[in-house]
Image (cartoon, rainbow, N blue to C red):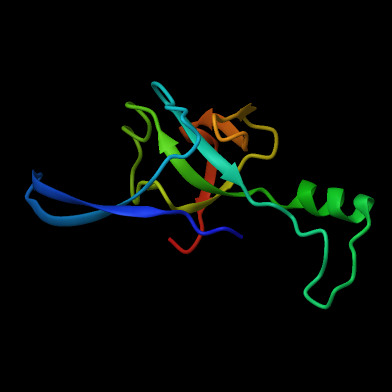
Length: 125
């Protein structure tokens, strides 16, 4: 899986925080609005680590089971009423299987645009 480029921003006087944050660049060119978020679903490998090709039907079954994604961008009001740890851009998350809709970014990649409430869990959070 391709690693995302990150840049460092200096943050001052943000609710008492003085330091640096790592921010993931958004190559999609899409900016969600309101309560929407933009994620990029994980790609399912077509070949195992041992070199065995996975048949299309098995690959489709694997895609149906696995709905992991990386949070790419968030709208202005997303997560405003969340309690506990709020997902951040760059976090790996589980998303609802049939939530949102697919969009194509300016980089010609497929993304999923969905509501903030469609995140089921933060991976490793």
